[in-house]
Each structure stands twice: as structure tokens, then as C-alpha cells.
Image (tube, rainbow, N blue to C red):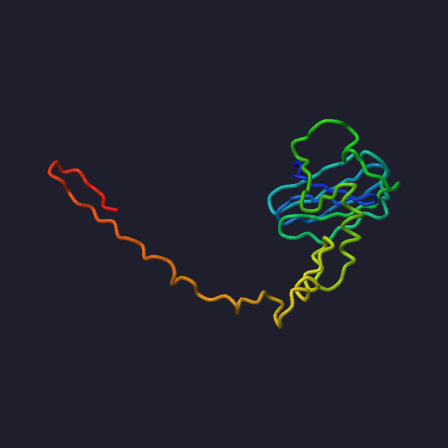
Length: 177
């Protein structure tokens, strides 16, 4: 009997990312048609099988997998109609074997912002901030702050006093300040 593998998913407006977790996976069958994706594979010890009935139609010809690694099979699928889906599966409700892949997840509003910011070149950090430009605006050869005018002014500080403990007649400790 086949087991249900763990499945992770993320989406873009026109694309789905599906990750099927199977140790040492050997893909025996992988096909997409209509709003369904069928996966059948095996590991050294078990057989796995799953059919995902998606929220909307997919382009079955676009189903591609990036070779299986030691733990996962990564699949990309084009949506037939580019739009954000409220969920992956046609049926509402939580299934224990399906999880969101937060490593690949982007919200609808993030997609455009990240693409625009990623277009920055040089020292850009992907958020519109250019570190090279900022450092050059600071001046100096290395772009750092100039501390040459500061002297070591610790001479004006009084020395710290040592606290000594002395025992009184009753064995209580007194502290001298």
C-alpha cells in the first residue's frame, strides 16, 4: 500500500511551487492535467502516491521537476489563468500532510515590490537601500567616521574605590565606602 508524502507549497500569480518530501525519491509517475497533479514514487523502503486536486486549472504541459535530491522532489507548475489562489486545494479544510513552504512564499503585494527592488545594482540590498552610495557619502578614505579629533579623556575620571569587607563584633559584614 502506498503512503501519502508530506507536501509543501507556495505560489506566485502565475506559478505554483510544490515540494514532495520523500527520502531518496525515485519518481515513477508525475503528470498534471486539468486541475490535478498525480505523483507516484518510491524510496528504498516505501512507495508513495498522491493526487492533488487544485483550487483552479493548471497547465499540465508545464509540470517540471528539478531532479530529486536526497530528501525532496521540487516541482514547478504554471497556472492556466494567472491569479492568486486563496488556497492550494479545491476542498476547504486542513489536511495534515500539506504545509506552506515559507521559504518560497510571497504575498500578492510583495511580488511587485521585491521585483522592483531586486532590479537595483551594486550595493543594493534588495530593499532600495544602496550601501555603497551611503558609505561614500560619509567621506574619508574608507567611508568611515573620523575619530582623530577625539582624545582619551579618561584622565579626568576619578579612580574607582575598592570596597573592603570587615567583620564586626557580631560577625556581620560592614562595607566601607
